[in-house]
Image (cartoon, rainbow, N blue to C red):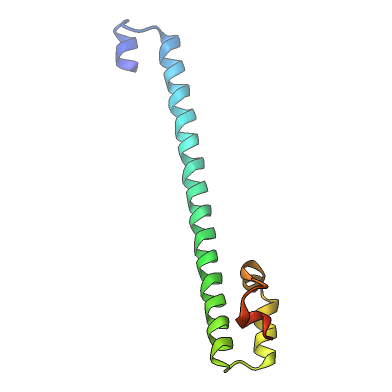
Length: 93
């Protein structure tokens, strides 16, 4: 764009406006990249919580977990996210 301005083909104000737009768009791109990274981190955290819930449920269903391991599962944040009072596996404890 500077080449066009140097040849007097576009006004300098137009060059400056386009440079501002370019900088703004680069900033927005950076924000979107950061938001994407945060979202991927939350997805990974949720997937881990799902695995923890599945493991607790499997132990409880097999009858291998004692009451203390069930209580540890029940007090975890992952259990609280997925707790279903109507689930016979959990309500039996």
